[in-house]
Each structure stands twice: as structure tokens, then as C-alpha cells.
Length: 193
Image (cartoon, rainbow, N blue to C red; front, side):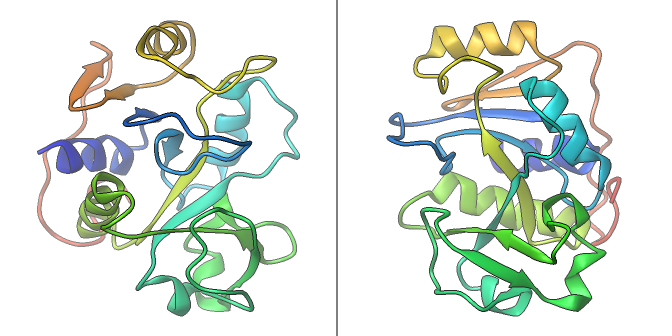
């Protein structure tokens, strides 16, 4: 249960490096080369910028299922699979997902669907089951001064040198021995949310 195990780590506030499928072209992390974290903890913005070794003003983005996006975000086109548009975060969601809500109440979202990125879609559903949040923090899988991770060796090197708790390497999970996610309780809103 790859989606469930990754969701457990994210719900327990772990940082996940996600490497799956073909490399992506361009400056965005679109579900094949991503660093992911819990969106409900504001400090995860600073934490991911520390992992990446970049300036603290740099934002991270929310990944959300296409069918859930209109209830959480507005003022932009849907779907938005390439993270090209800024959307207003609905007022009732701003405090629930502070890591991905910019100071002006907006977010540059990426919508996910089962056809383009089925594993990430399954992860989003599993994460919501554990936390009640249908959003995951997403930023590109790279560190300061380095290009996006391109091959498995790059992914393993990043995992070995950055404070990342779990590496998804295709169908495989590489864990740190020092991180243990709590058992899934099955109740929404639990699991470290």
C-alpha cells in the first residue's frame, strides 16, 4: 500500500521525496519529482526551504485532486495540472493549509487526476483519510544550486544528504531508520494532523 504508507509518513509530519516515472520538463514539480509535506503546519514552508537550501520567502505549492479543487480554491481556471495559475484560497481553508497559503491568501495550485498521475491521486485520497486535508505540499525535488533530480542515483544522493524522512523510488520505499510513522487509526483528522 504505497499510498497509505506515504500518507502515514506525511500525516506524522515527515518530509517525502517522490521520484516516480519519467522526468518532467521545465521548472515545476508535477508529481514525478517532488518534495512533499503536511500542508497544515505553517512551519513546513520554512522546513522545506531549509531542505532545499533556498531563501525563506520562496513559496511551495498545493497538490489537490481536480474534483476537490473548486471547493478550496477559486479565481482561476480548472483543471490546473501545470501549476501555471494563481488561485484564491477559500477563507475557510486558509488556516487549515497555511504552509501553501501565501501571505496574500493565494496559492499556485496543481490539480491531480487519476489519468495523469494515479499514484499521486491515490496518495492524496489516503492523506485525506488520515488528516481530513485533501491537499499536500509540493515543491521540486532538488536542492540549492542543483537541477531537478533526474535519475535514481540523484534521488538516492539527495535522500542521503538532505533531511528527508522517506524516499519513494518508483514502487519502492527507502526509509530512515530514525523515523517511524504511527499506525493508521482510520479516523479522519487523526494521524498527527
